[in-house]
Length: 257
Length: 337
Image (tube, rainbow over the protein chains, first blue to last red):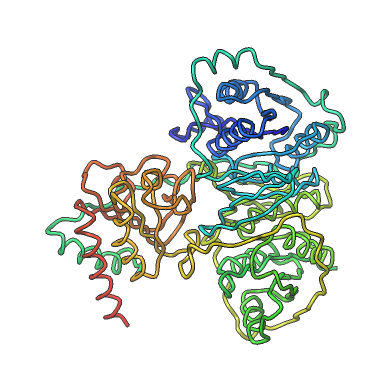
């Protein structure tokens, strides 16, 4: 099976956000594989372990994203492609267009991505790619079984309910938490990853797309920090008195009940 | 010629979701003073009664819609990506909208990127506020689960519609006016051929509220200690007509389903009241709930970081405190009624 995994490098979820010069400071930040994409990588590796084939990684981003791709190679993926080009605008329509132009002639059997990225959080790019490639998609999956007849049966999380869906391959899936428990790279895995094929591409290397076509549909106007919350009161007295006090305050001060 | 703003009127458990009315209110906001038609798209099972349809349409009209497109299909009772996409595309080609607004719900998140791609359209997702400034429409949306916030605008020369998904519980409802009524148009719809089959839907949440729309959330962390430990929290939530949530710690420990997780992975919630029980308050969890109007924290550890963001803190064992809260709220609510 020829599997492609869409993957994005993000801040570690432990990181605080600091704004400098109208942008988000990257000073001293620890970078990770977007947690939802990590489930996608793990699932792809497991599928290839069971059914054979190859796990290819694909990312759009700055050159530092290469480290994240190496981590996924160390987990067990086979090859990686990083598309780095400042002419690609930060807009989901444009990014999906680039990725689908690249994927169009890769002969994919299955594409896996994350449900959304923990930084931008829009969750658009993977599903847009499915449409552009004319593939069915199932978003937010928690279980994926390949059938003997070239299809898949998946469980999809829909606000807590589970939908069980049959689909023919090729298809695209986005991973939800609970799909699997991603493995850690082993030391031999890390050593092997250094020798695995890694391609750094620009728009000029991708057929069927030109920079002129990539006019952003949306753009950032400003960035700000949310108002910070102040610590409130720690209630005093015995627990029954605290509870009574709380209800009084919710009614009289906060006016929420 | 006036322009059209199209909203998706999402139904859950045979009721219009609050976010369907918020989408119409967002359309009213986008329309501003420019002459605009606000149309809503309603996908219903074929056996939906006329009374029910009138009720749905009435609510949409009352909040600002002036046209409701109704499409009927036997399989609209449950979400199906290809079927729903085909239906919405059909309405889009009929209504030719300048803007399309969905809730940022399970359905909205799944369907709109696909719709956007068929239309070569830009999309701004998970929008919490909309405003006009210097002739531009600015959409506010959280990044990093709310650790920072961006304003985003549509740009460029494309004639494609602009698509917005709105986060539930954030766009204020336009003032209801029940005297308004307008046009209901039933649109014939030939479903596309389907490549996916929804074999079954296992309802785990029947009768309970979705977290993103709940006004009150009672949330548990590692301090809850077991799946059974969530029972007192469920009782409190039920008295308050709220929903139960959880921290990643509780989900990872297997006390509850990942569907309940609140935080940077998981859901971001903005209820009126958030009651954190036995949650220490890791930065990832705080990102997911700091937008709540009032935060109440119950924790044994007076040093827990959750107290730094809580409006009201109770230092104590949640297994003592939560039942006291349940009794006290029940008495208060009975007294009020």
